[in-house]
Image (cartoon, rainbow, N blue to C red; front, side, top):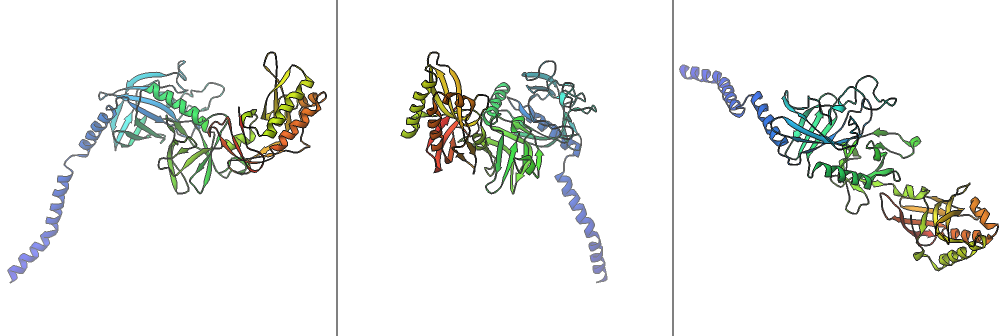
Length: 448
């Protein structure tokens, strides 16, 4: 019995060592490569991925925001397995007279094997290296950087993740996020398609956009520059937040440098919706809607009434104005009636009569009766006319010989009094729209 107990005690004493030995052998079986060999294999795998794209990669490049705020830039790269890279772009910081011109440059790249993989462009490349050069690329005296820090772009990038279609990088020094995605068309076509889309969704007329997730609304301003301000109010004095972000435009819309959020919803990239009324996020939970109604309520351009849609009363007033104007000048005829800002020494906003000469059929002048146009709610316009509203100098001169022109013009303006639901002909770049009465007024359509 004593021997049996002794053997049992010896066995129990040896058991932890046996268990530990067993675990160690299992680990050795699982990790059958050294760390150095594993990262070498990862580098080889990624090198093959980089070289596998027939059209190369679109590189959505960003600089850090700690020096200045820059837009995102579309660069392009084609890699081979031997370390050669061809890069291209038409960005505005290209040197030697190439700014804004499609330019290609060949250099080398490396996959450095440190704690993880580093995609490194350590040799000068005309397309990329300008972003890392300590020399400020902007012309004097408008230099942005005064301390030799350059634009705070990177040329070495930590590989955060990769697959055959997308590679996510982070600048090793300045931390900006950079994305490579497999290009689905040749580079110059991609650039041209991106410019077409940018022109489609941004312009100098509609400059503000609502960012909505159904229950909450924030705003983008200044999207045209690629440096949108993400804010909670369009009026600066009402803003409690105003974050300058960066985005890069794509053939389908635009993509933010980093994932952002509104409420509980997140967004990174927006594409133009099929009905072209807004842009939608990846999962459709967030929409970017142009504030076209702000422009419609405040534009100065003269939008002309579609005479084919006049009520009988409006058509009658139009004909009477046309007859009366010839009492002022027999060579004149009424070319159109519109809404906008008149010409003359005291420009007014309101109803605008435009005339042409019967001989040359060229526009000669405009005359107007003032009214106000405001936005009482999203998608609505309110026209308010008063009999005391001003007329411009051109109208004053006309009524000296043809006073009924003013009378009929005021009657026309008075018929427009009311609140309207407006459907623009283009949500991003409206040049007209249908006005449907909500309260008062008459149905009409105007266009540039």
